[in-house]
Amino acid sequence: MKKWQDKESLKELLCHLVEFPSITGSDAEIAISEFIHMKLNDLQYFKDHPLDLQIHPTSDGRKFVTGLIRNGNSSETVILISHFDVVDVEDYGEFKNLAFRPKELTAEYMTIKNDLPEGVQDDLKSGEWLFGRGSMDMKAGLALQMSMMEKASLGEFDGNILLLTVPDEEANSTGMMEAVEVLLEMSQTHGLHYKACLNSEPIFTRYPGDTNQYVYTGSIGKLLPGFLCYGMETHVGEPFSGINANYMVSELTRELELNTDFCEVIEGEVTPPPTNLMQKDLKEEYSVQIPHVAVTLFNMMTMERSINDINKDLLAIANKVAGRIEKQLNERAVSFNQWESFDPIDNKISVFTYQELLEKAIEQYGEAEIVRRQAYIAGSYRLIGDRDLSTRIVFDLASLCKEEGPMIVLFYSPPFYPAVSSRENPFIKQVVGEMIEYAKNQHNVVLKNQHYFAGLSDLSFTSLSQPVEGLIPLFRNMPLYQNGYHFPLDELQQLKIPVMNLGPLGRDPHRWTERLNIDYSFGAFHDILGTAIHKLLK
Image (cartoon, rainbow, N blue to C red; front, side):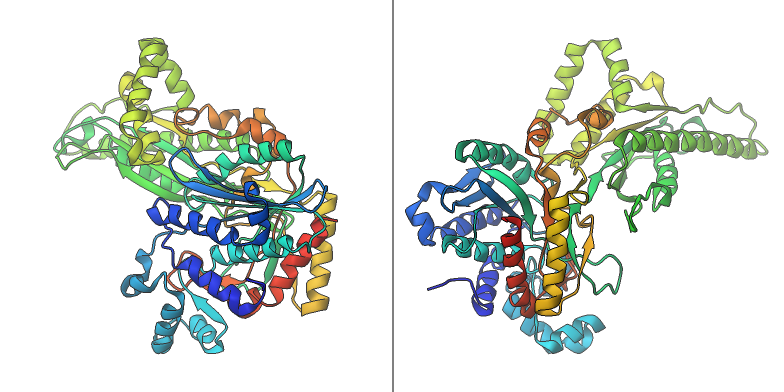
């Protein structure tokens, strides 16, 4: 008897998956990996081939699952990747207790449908949608891929299917990055040729009200540049004797927030402009000393632009802002001089990269001492998270080199997602063209080709589009690189797997109205996904 091949059984599987509150970093994130392993182990194929289904530990105690179903002696293999972690549920407010109970949550929303946003009301009335955290992003994709594994176990595909489902996609992609080495090992051990990596992240809208359905041939990249501003301390009663770091970071944020000069356009697709993700001073308690150290970090999306060019532009912004701060401080000191006569302090602000500041610190204190200090910080403050840990390391260097201040220091924090694209790959272009035609002819579904999946995905860790030397400005200026943050650089140079994303239809990811269209996703799309795998294995 087939387990997951019809709409109702797939809905039940999805509900079981959603019922695990697998928020990134939680115990349930580990528990769901064991549940997935258990469910797949019910397939007769894995009863007969138990070594082909494995659960792998990550370095931080989480787990990812691989399942390989081989068809005869073929080496041709399609990888199906997915993630099973989800974001937090604080946004659900009074419905938080139902966020992981999709049937009950959907029923509850029905009782208050007239109070919900208009688009949500329409979907509730149709009866085709299921609500709940992870219903769209991306446990529906995982359920569908488990269904494809069942098909593979019944010999329905002319080739091998390798399922890889991982934790931590919503934060740092630790699961996928550590799985890269396993993919390489499996290709060598089993003689696998990876024809394509197929992700099933759901369709993401490109703009409010977008109703298009997409098939993607790549995934957007992400950088997290930060600026540590080291000003000059003073008492609030003598503000012109120092430089407030909060003022410094606010000027940087004003310059970079939604700055469209950083948007990249590829064949009509455009990256979102940078936006601030963290801005704060580093004072640990209230006092009447001005904040003299602060940090601001930005989300920056990339497609094909080189990191070297981005790094140069960020430094140009920092130098521009430094000059503006100097000018404004001088003007305001002159204005205040009408009441109090004094000589303004030297407001010259230096701009450094992290690497430049590191070299200055090593020159003064020796490499052994700097390595010791950074190891101590990394070991003592690991629990504060990669962003704050990066900031603390830069802060320590700036404190050691405070005679170089006031200063702005450009650095990068994890996570880093390389942009990846198969838009020029003839094989992927052919399959996408055939799928667009198939979806239209067989299901009257219009799929549009988009080169880059804009929601970020683990496809970023299936190959490396940029030459290694192009990444030097990033890794040299990332305090945690090889100091608690491992990026699988060598492994990605070896993988070079063509990519594609074809996923179900949902709405409002990461919002309390997150939902999945059950009728399409487990109906027509179930067939479309299976057909795509057939074509990828040709």
